[in-house]
Amino acid sequence: MAKAKSLTIRQQVRAVGGVAWLSFQAAPGAVIFKLIGSIINALLPIATTYFAAQTTTALASAYSGDPSAKPLVIFYVLLTAAIGLTMIVWRSLDNYVQSKMRYIVETRVSDQMFERFLSLDFWRYDDKRTADLYDRAQKFARFFAWVFDRIANIVSLLISLASTIVALMLVNWVMAILILLAVIPGVYVQLKLSRKQMKHWNENVEVRRALNLIEWNMLQPKLISELRLYGMVRYLLQLRTRLRDTSEKARIDIERETIPLSLLSNVLESVAEVGALIWISLQIVARQQPLGQFVYVQQIVTQAISSASMAISTISTIDEDIANLFDYEQFMQLPMAKGGDHVLHEAPAEIVFKGVSFHYPGKKSPDVLRNITMRIQRHQHVAIVGENGAGKSTLIKLLTGLYSPTDGQLLLDGTPLKSIDIASWHRQLSVLQQEFIQYGFATARDNVQFGDVEAPTNSKRVELALQEAEATGFIGKLSNGVDSYVNNWMEDDNGNKGTDLSGGQWQRLALARNFYRNAPVIILDEPTSAIDALAEARIFKRLFEGRQRTVITISHRLSTIKKADVIYMLKDGEIVESGTHDELIARKGHFYKMFEAQIRG
View 1: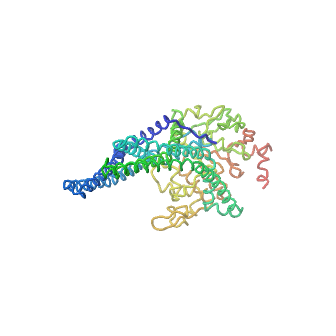
View 2: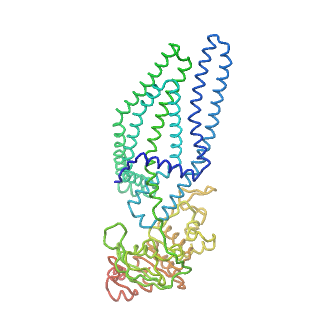
View 3: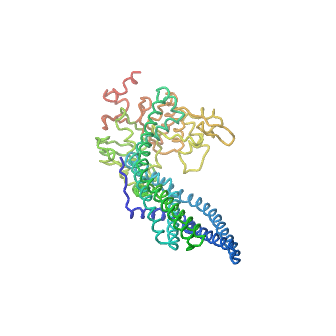
């Protein structure tokens, strides 16, 4: 469980300053405009109240027969109307500036969050603490622009509160102090409530994450069949309800606990307001104050209490966000993944694992890989086999530089991989993993061209890649051919609806993406598990033709690996056998036992 933060006043002030500074960096002109607007929004209503009171006094004098009061009535009415018009015009401009600033700030913060998240060390994506930190930081980033708006509103409301207290002091300083004291309990109650709600939020990260995952699963059309077949629909609905109700009940209980104090603070405010009105009424009756002072005091007291209440309410909504600013800052300070300075300009002639061992960061489990020593030559076809959990996919993660060995070295032409510019190594690779990305928002052509987005689009390369992946047949049957969307929720400008693909079709499209990339080193992790054997044979025949690529394959299909130059057999994270297909079968060891059924078949 995440621990709730208890921020000091100093930390809160620093956090508010941090939001203001980030906003100022993104849109300085808009921030200055907003600050000026905060002052204007606070002072114009007080000016309106003052002249409304003067109008009332002048009306009373004119009604009593004072001829000099009539021009004053007209003057005050026109002046009050002018102030009202100014407020209307200003608020229109303010709304526009708010919208523009919100967009600028929101996009900047969001872009920074995405860039940081996508550039972290790979192990952090498997780290729960990083995931929790990102969850809270993302929430803050999503509402960052709104947080600044609310801070500006708080500034305006506090200026308004201070101004109304000063305005009341001009009438009676005792009354002003009493009104100020009356709003303090409300401040305490709201802040106490917000702190408890913040603590509840931070302690329920896992509950919200579970709810989101449950709702996501229930709303995926592709998953509905399994959910219904296994009777999971009702179970998940009940689980969702149970998690949601548990969380919401705790939140509602927090609000219920503050009801007595909240009622007490409201009573104090009402008593103070009524007392002020009784006092000014007695003063007017005794002719010690003009008639207009009733309107003045009534409006100012109402505005003071209203400003305090609104400021407290707004503070309570951003208190949690301000606390989450520290999560945002901590997340943005996470180091970005860095490789070395050595740039690869071509594929290495030799890839060497030299006594490599590995265990996942932050986990106390035994090494996933132990003392791996293997050599891969340029244009060699290498197969890596083993039971599930033997460490095959982890080996590929090390080879691609997503993780670094915890012991031993991974060398490219004698240079440690950690010393190589990782982007230059990735440009030499084409990797098809078991869980490849399905770009459902794009067309079939896009899905292929995403294999090499740095190169200009090339229709002939797309066609060739589709042919090599045995995907031309089903692509030609789509409503708009290669330009068809591959998701039935998408539709092009001509009204052609997209089509969902089968698992095998998606796998061929992903293979086409890798053929389109045309990288000198190809890594295939169970590349044809959903493709029939005959199509697989044709695909690998094309893949091996000419021996112009280094091919590293993980597969449980004997037909896929039997033509490899060398096969490495992994068992419990160690290489227990290596050799050609014929050599390993003749040895009748671990490899033979694993593939015995396929060999006899």
